[in-house]
Image (tube, rainbow, N blue to C red):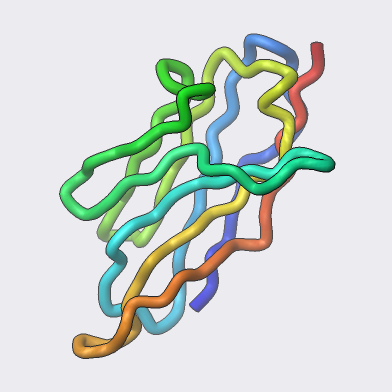
Length: 120
């Protein structure tokens, strides 16, 4: 199983970016997908998650600015980031809880990360 992120880059404060993460490989079902971020010298923190059924959860710092969504048919999760601030600068990681077989356990997977830099 692989999670591949795309869409990071450099943007000015107030700008927008959209991150995409596609899960591939032997996947039976995906229970939840999400985005985390890690700034230099800081711990990795939750940004947003979305579970089966569409329920979402956001960090307080991004509520009202970021929107997470899923395309279940494509095993893809998107993160639309608007009104970006310099403090949003970090490496953003995709995360997924998924099963590879019908009766198998659920495992957690991480992508390789994509850099988001917001200039002031």
